[in-house]
Amino acid sequence: MIDATVEMVIDEFNYRLALAMPSTTVIFHKPIFEDGYLDIGMKAKLVGVRPDVSYVGEETGEQMWLLEFDFSEFVEFNKQRETSDYYDSHGNPTLTATEAGYVPKNRREEFYVMRTDDTYYFSILDESEENVIYFESKEERDMAVRGLMDLDALFEMRVNEAGAAGDAHHAVIAQKERDVVAKALKAFGVDI
Image 1 (cartoon, rainbow, N blue to C red):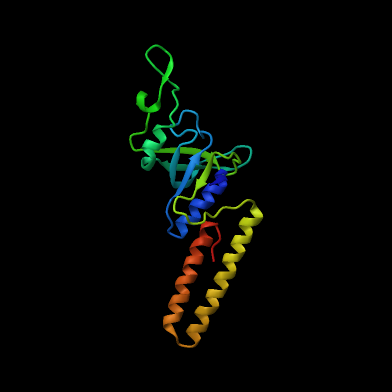
Image 2 (cartoon, helix red, strand yellow):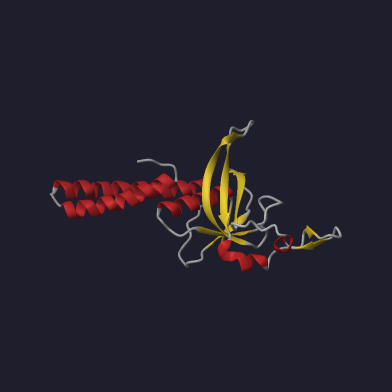
């Protein structure tokens, strides 16, 4: 489990998407939106990330991002973590979201956030026992991008060498490897 900011979870989502890996699963440390269903200790899969082109911050010029979470796989897990903060007919906060009927029917919830919001809302979970890629700093992220660019240069050289030698089979293999690297680089906003 790795604590993550908004930017880190967007990078992780894009990385996994580029490499056709499973969705990013998170557990919430604090609610992003007080009136939302997802709350402290609940799990969800991050299934969508996109910029909101309709909003740009007046002071900073920063764009809002929409994060879409699907918690359908974790209904029972999350139900155990619901708090009694919905009011009953006597005006007392005794009902959970499920009891009050406030669980989204499609088991999805969307939140608008600033990409640079450095609040640790969640942790990225490693459900499949594979290593989760995350970056402690911009320097680490830049180093990963440089490593991917070095791989791209190596695969490009292999494509050219195989092509010059008339070895179409190895040229195709090297190109497929290069395509995977290009997809990962694109997730970081680098086009080659």
